[in-house]
Length: 226
Length: 255
Ligand SMILES: [Fe+3]
Image (tube, rainbow over all chains, first blue to last red; front, side, top):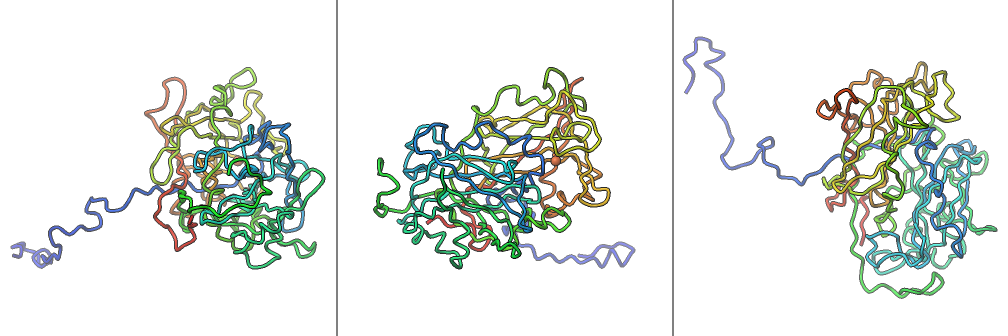
């Protein structure tokens, strides 16, 4: 029924409406999706991370004096092949028995006293990082097989708006590395080589290359989206 | 398997492990690693596409860091080296949640910031603004059982940084959080509402427009303290363990 209003603009307003009772619409006020909060966006650590992120025991994934402790060492390079003197490297890994110091490891706690599994090292000392730890053991791959011994690595720096993530594997675990599902998924041996640390006097060494530097023969490290 | 060493050959596992899986923020609302206007990203941000890493045991666990890393004094940045810091005293508080809305309890929160004049206590920062003898800019707190955190500080000043002509960082506080898994690790910056410097700051504008508001705290008159301090609220959301895939299949499948 149309309005008796004087104006044809009012009289002629459309009265049809195809809404059917009982059918929910967007904006109906009914929640029909699970609660989902947007995550907080990341930002660079900037050049002053030493203020907030320095710990006296930062480099110790395992307590000082633990038998069998080794050093994971390396340097961080940029796309000019120059050392990055204001980065921070964090490592997270299993103990020699392949267990994590964390309640979500369904197989139980770590077996080594004083093993934190986590370390952080800035690269203030000439662009080099150093982490005192124990060599990790093989870790279940979640599908009935095993991952080769490895360390998860986060690199933070001025100029990186988010951390970049990579892994450290060990050159003297060739057999385990050959069947590791993460290494196997990489395109070629050149890519795999960027993740494999070589033995040194006091542990292992692996440099991180944030970008290729062809002039100096440096290949960008494989980084992972987690 | 207890007692075996890394040298022993391992038998295949009986069955697959049941592990949480962490959702991923869609690309359109996640800060990219590189941003053209932020000069330092040019030689540092990797140029190749990162390889998807499915979430397995190493990724769904992470360091458990709590009370043992903080003292009570770490939550008050305004009282250092025997005296009171200069500047506008503020309380910064909020909750640490995951994207499913669950609080993250007993988790370490590390913060650092410039002083009221915009100067950091750091050898690299030598722009001509005064250091404050009673401010070092370092704070550490642990979330409570409900995921809440709170600290007292002074409002940091803006500072110039040479990225482009007349470049100034909006006032901000740096935050570092671990959550409970390697996948949840977050380093970020908290901003203050209505900062006039947002428009010219590439670090702020690197955040996709749909997510920028998540980096900005809210002035909270209710929590100001009479004759003492202003208050800002900022909730931090880490990735959650929901099974709902965000993107095609690069969330990382456990099994
Ligand atoms: Fe800053």
